[in-house]
Image (cartoon, rainbow, N blue to C red; front, side, top):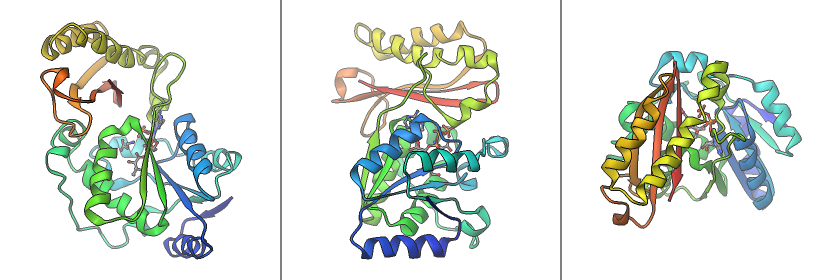
Length: 279
Ligand SMILES: Nc1ncnc2c1ncn2[C@@H]1O[C@H](COP(=O)(O)OP(=O)(O)OP(=O)(O)O)[C@@H](O)[C@H]1O
Ligand SMILES: CC(C)(CO)[C@@H](O)C(=O)[O-]
Ligand code: BAL
């Protein structure tokens, strides 16, 4: 596996790959890789000649400095895992080079970012859109692979690709979970044993909500699910939403939408986790 940190080198390399007529599958990540990321690497590999994975803890998308400082960084182990999966190129730039020219451009995704992650993490999607635009220019992939776990991020990136005419296909893959249902996440490493023990309740709450929505209106189903979660004092819910899976705007009745997403963000101590299910 080749590894680059230089922006010029990765661009030269992917340009050469394109000139040879090879297709490039790209998996952008923030590292501390787990099976969720590896599922995206495998998908990219099965559909492309060459797979590029980026590992970059993007300072511009963190609204909480402690979250940035404590984000797990395991580049050496990530490299070994990627090589084992047959990934062809690891791109791990330094923040100093990515943001050598302080990014000034700002994005506004309208209603899409006024809810959930966008509402609770000011500036987050501006940072995501900035770095994803940079990465798309540098890697010039034919396909880019993302996880459904970051459902709103995927919607934002779809809009970005449409608005800026990026010539690539976006692909979204399902959430990979631990055996007890907890969505895999790099931040799970930061959970204490006690927090880890209670964390599967988040996915369970989404299942409870789904079950209640079969017979109850949204408001009542949400209230009862919040009551279910309130029994676990270690969990502090930031939002629990029933939204249209396309527009991500809240719905009052499930029947209003063709496809509905149940989305949750919650803190366990200082660690903030998200999860969702699609109905
Ligand atoms: N459990 C998972 N299943 C499938 N894809 C995932 C999973 N977790 C993350 N991804 C996807 O991997 C890509 C990189 O995500 P990222 O590196 O932020 O990992 P993460 O585990 O979500 O980290 P964290 O949630 O702690 O930021 C994103 O497209 C994300 O949606
Ligand atoms: C897409 C991404 C790599 C941009 O930093 C990040 O938001 C992530 O890991 O989901
Ligand atoms: N996977 C989303 C990146 C973030 O939480 O900043």
